[in-house]
Image (cartoon, rainbow, N blue to C red):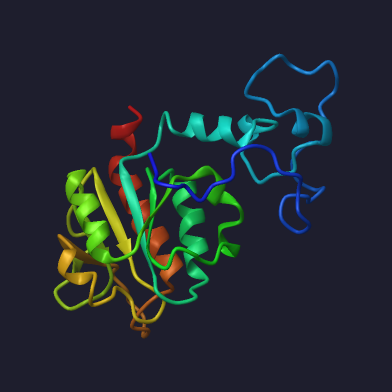
Length: 223
């Protein structure tokens, strides 16, 4: 379980522009309310406008996290956080969509959450001050660090299967994986590209890499 998870448990009334869109979700639940401890009385009374799948309508955040914990995948996602990168939130949101085991923030503890669209509430998030801290944690849990970057010597992402249990490591937009992180990588994979640009957006790259893992291993985790 995470150390000091950056996650809010329980119902919070919607904030403008985030969870209160009247075009999505459901309104107040008709009474009498179902007798189900997973349901949140505040959501039952006020309606549930969150961006969650239908099966989780009216569920408390705590109940959703507990249910997700029963079927999370074996891959982890690590993101370096040395500068104000808006892509970090996008990576977190994608990690939630693909049900990563945990998200690891390496570097600054505070990160830009806007792109996460509150999906960080449903994820386990662990902070590591330095790359060496992430490497020590991964070694203790027998998980190789797999860098995703087009560094010299990288092998194609689709060239061979990714390990079932692993940590996919992503750098910042622009500089990519830091020089401090590179020595700790078990290997580095590059995403094949065919146009004129040298690199692709960090959030896009993370989505491609996570989907590649899902395509190879999701059936193993959910036979």
